[in-house]
Image 1 (tube, one colour):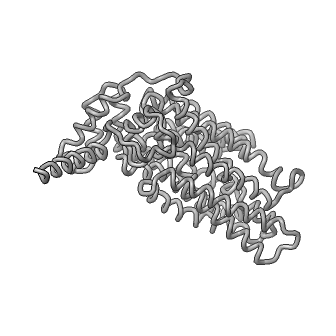
Image 2 (cartoon, rainbow, N blue to C red):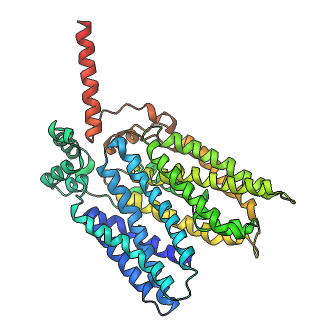
Image 3 (spheres, helix red, strand yellow):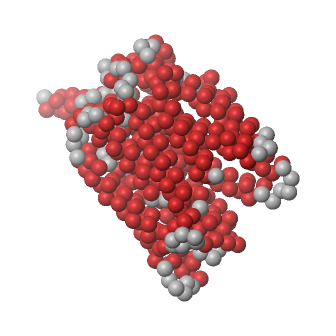
Length: 444
């Protein structure tokens, strides 16, 4: 059932890029909400397994849409200094949703009437209704409006999402000028441009980090947590530990949101990967013992919870943040779309193979599966060090300039940009110029 649903998510990821380019993020979000509501209605009214599966595929189609629309929208409207916090929030809400859904389903599973499953499926349409009610008050992306030569509307939208100081000081007007002078006014590039000499590095980064998110076990921790606990002999406490796992991950996801714009994407993700490696290998090592003690079992549980907590604070949100900000203006939607679709493909492989790796018939690895995910997490740490650039605090236009400079990833944080893009970057440049004038005056 999980594998079939991913078909819908893959389709959503692949079609959403052109939709955003044509009608904008707000209209694309309306499409997403309508699909979500239709999917919920189809499931609630199901009288056959086939109809229920169709509804589930529609729900995941909406998931594929929203996981593209939201990060790209947030990356375009947020000031550079808040982009990590805002885009990273998607991981918080995914984790919080898993926590709420797990608790609700545990309660509703005890119902003996049809009301239980009907409530569980019908409530999926509620967030879409709430979002639809808020969309009339949500501005379009100023960058998208500039790409459609709608300058006045772009300025109006920018004034709505910037603070009073930016409005009164003229920063909004300067930001619009910067956007007009960048690639935001260029025609959107075709899919083939993703792999052109100028863009293939960006595409590779987005694809790789999305794959690593899955290969270190994010779907395993969210979908197979209870199964894992049962496999290691904790079936009677599987739900409790899974709820604790999700609850702790919600807290660490919030912490991660606050840290990405302070410590940076690169450092946080690098340290997150090697720490995950340690906890996953601990799970594998303790699970390899022929005669496990209570302490060994408790150690595995603690390691699993801590591994998931670190994942949801670092690599989990970093994948969405990086994929949303690494693409150039003419390919941003397509970069996010292809990386999300690839995430689904790798996730499908993980979901399909995990039951066979975990139990019999199959490899019956049990807790030793930690070695597999731990190995990928170790590879992830190496990849981050050599290939993941630091994009903290840079406007999307400055990101373009960084890639044009063709610096190695480990030197990216030292790059000094001369290109401006948003209010943060413009204000930073103003402050630098004031300091330079003051220094000259002191010398005189």
